[in-house]
Every structure is written in structure tokens, then in C-alpha cells.
Length: 271
Ligand SMILES: Cc1cc2nc3c(=O)[nH]c(=O)nc-3n(C[C@H](O)[C@H](O)[C@H](O)COP(=O)(O)OP(=O)(O)OC[C@H]3O[C@@H](n4cnc5c(N)ncnc54)[C@H](O)[C@@H]3O)c2cc1C
Image (cartoon, rainbow, N blue to C red; front, side):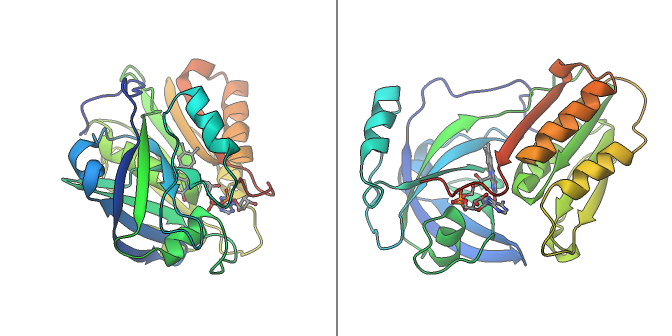
């Protein structure tokens, strides 16, 4: 079990450079890229729970990473002012697993990826061992303080690494329910977590269905346990907002809900 359960943001943030160590497909819609080496191997601190980070990767055709000079607002502004063709691609991801010197990242394989698609999903599909990456640790979003009667975890596939990290970090006597939506039954993964937290896999099995709709519908239809919950809800924007709205309407205190829209269906690709 991880030792912290309060929101943790690193005090001294620094972009850490490393490289790709391995790449594999863990399920039909999930790619795993293992990174490490360099500063990442020496300086990255694993924190458990849903620890997330800013991931900098090369765009198609780039073999050098052009990064912000500093992680100040001014540093970011300068970075964003670089031409798209020059600066590294920047997206948010979660630590799926951490071992000494290396980190696994699970990236949803979404969209039709070609050799020139400037997306993290595209990068995951084509990156090679030795290609450069950089990470900026953003810490842990989980804010449960252990005073709740039970835990509710809800995620679509983009939130699967966070949900599995949370389940693995909960104390052994935790009770609750995890609703994990995935594209197909084959996208479910082994779960490490407390026996008292029931895990329900929700497979869409419909290529055209919008991720998150099934999980939201399931939460709304569910008979939830009595007592004071702490809810952790991540994934497509409408899932996160919809579950929060439902729980608040059911009398759950807003402070007992951590929710985050990880991406927005139909949004223009970020630059
Ligand atoms: C704190 C945090 C942690 C995250 N952790 C993870 C993680 O561990 N694994 C993970 O896969 N994602 C994670 N995400 C979500 C990820 O950052 C977004 O899905 C991101 O948009 C993917 O970037 P991209 O370059 O592949 O696609 P983009 O260029 O950003 O988007 C291209 C198009 O694809 C759509 N799209 C984006 N993501 C998805 C998706 N998952 N499914 C279907 N369509 C999509 C967009 O709406 C857009 O139309 C996390 C997000 C946050 C905020």
C-alpha cells in the first residue's frame, strides 16, 4: 500500500528526461510504453494512487525533444509560442506501474493512427526503444483521507491506470465498488486491491458508443451502499461531470468527490 492518501503535488517540479525502454500492446485498445533511463531513472519518485504527469514526446519526424526551458508560466508561454512543428507534443498520463529505474505508461489506442498523426496515441503506436521522452511529475489527485465508510471508483479506459493505481493503494480493509468501463471484455486487466472493493468491468462492445456513457448509466442505476462515500471519478468529461452531478443530487458532499474530465469526446485534437 502506498504511504500517502492526501493530495500531493511535488514541491520542486522539474522536467526529467529519459527514453523508451519497451513497447507492447496489453489489450486490444491499450498500449504500454515503458520509459526510464537518464534523469527519469535517477530522480523520479513513485507516489502510488493516481499519480499523473505531463508527458513530452516527439512529434512525427522529430528525433530531438524541444522542451520548456522552465516550468514557470513564462517558460510554458515560450514553449507554446514555438511553432508546432518544433516543440514536443505534450499530454497528461498516469503512472501505471513503477519499478526501480522504469515506469509503465498505459495509453488508450484511440482513433485511426497513421505515421504522421501528431497524438500521444500515435506516438505509442510507433515509438522505438531509445527514442526520447520527458516527464513532469504532477503528483496525486486522490484526496481521500481514510475517514469514509466506503469508496466509489468510476473510470473509462483512459482512467483505467488511475483507477487500478487507486485500488492497489487502498488499505486492505477498504470497502466499496469500482465500475471500470472498457471497449471490449478483452480490455479488462488483472486487479490488485482490497477484497472488500467489488470490481465490475463494463464492456461497451459497441465501436460507435461514446466512452463513459455506459459507466454513467450504471452508476445512476446502481443501488449504492449506505454510509459516507469517497468517490473518485475520471475519464471522458461527461462521465466525470455526470457522476458528480448524480452523487451530489443523492446527497454526497462535494468535498467527498474527486472528479476529473481526462478528455472530451468530439474535441479538436490539442496542439
Ligand atoms: C490527469 C490525467 C491523467 C490521464 N491519464 C491517462 C492514462 O494513463 N492513459 C490514457 O490513455 N489517457 C490518460 N489521460 C487522457 C489523455 O491525456 C487524453 O486522452 C489525451 O487527449 C490523449 O492524447 P492524444 O494525443 O492521444 O489525443 P488528442 O490529440 O488529445 O485528441 C485527438 C482526438 O481524440 C479524442 N480522444 C482523446 N482521448 C481519447 C480517448 N481516450 N478515447 C477516445 N478518443 C479520445 C479527442 O477527443 C480528439 O478528438 C489522462 C488525462 C489526465 C488529465
